[in-house]
Structure formats: structure tokens, C-alpha cells
Length: 149
Image 1 (tube, rainbow, N blue to C red):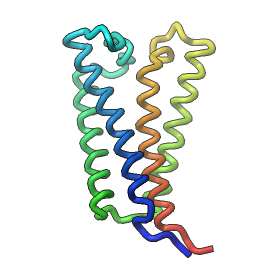
Image 2: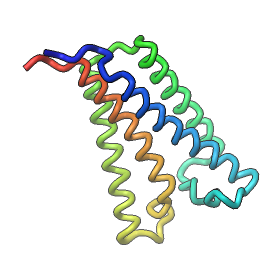
Image 3: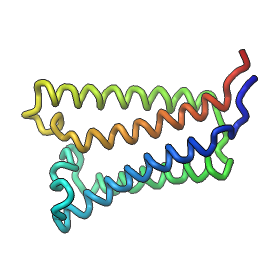
Image 4: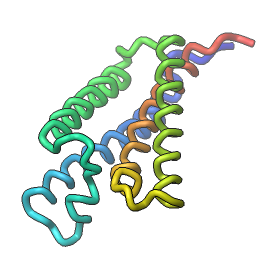
């Protein structure tokens, strides 16, 4: 018997809300550090790998947060239509993203820590947050479109 489309909606909503909140915290903390250098937060450079100029990064982060919030709102209001294909895409992208960031962290911790991209551990941590959002969203789609045995 397949799962009803919105079985376990509450747990998905809690997990996705937590991940979105963590991502928004990251965006806000980095912005605050850039302008105020608060002593209880890591320095600005810890939040930023330097690959993308900060102003562009901030715009992209705001866009990502808005998109994730929109998806979450559609899920909570039961207007997100479960799709097996979307679930597979989200899950695959999320897993590849997670594995690339895990490799980045591993390489940074074991050998190439002199290269800033590999030693920007805080930035990598928040990439895990985003990959986790994709994985959970993919799981939701796949679970709610599960085929009967």
C-alpha cells in the first residue's frame, strides 16, 4: 500500500524548517560579520570561501532562501504535488552535492588545508545544510509516490 501524499507532513515540515532556519542564520551571521564584526561569531572570512564575490553571493543566498521558503510553504499548505521524478532528481542532486562537500571537507582536513577553499569549514557545513534540504525534499517526493510492493 502506498503512502498517502501528506503522511508524516509534520516531520518533513519540521526538518525542512530547521534546515531553512540554519541557512538563514548563516546568511544573516555573515552579513552581520561583514558590517559589525561581532565577537561571538566567527570572523567574516570564516563564512566566505571567496569563490563568489560577496555581493553576488548575498543576492544568490537570498534567492535560495526565498525559493526554499516557497517550497516549504507549498508543502505545509499541501499544494506541493508529489512527483516521483522530482523526488529522484532532488535526491540525486542532494546526494552528489553532499558527497562533493564531504570530499571537500576531507581533502581540507587531510592535505590541502593551505588552499582556502578546502579549509573554509564553516562554508562547507552550510553546504551540508542545503544538500540536506534537497535530500529531505527528495525523500518526501519518493515516499509519497511509493509504488505498492
